[in-house]
Image (cartoon, rainbow, N blue to C red):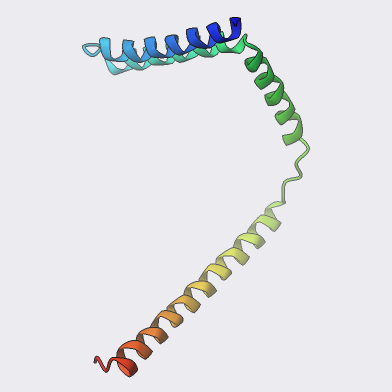
Length: 115
């Protein structure tokens, strides 16, 4: 029940930040944006201490550990694969253009006799 109350409080803090944005309509935009950011920041701080917030923190830590295990391609491999993708895109564009023009010729010139 305490977690639900914390989530409700977090939602109210976000709503308060958004309300502050509109209530401060006479102020400079920076102050209005800071009101929203303060509301969101306070909501995140409250939500952080819930059970779901703690599970999310563990998930983020595990994600960082897993991302450090990724083997990234070298610059040469990246350039080569970009060239392959570019060549494939050009080949597909040519194929689709030829198909379109062929169907246009068959339908308009041969079937319908439109010139």
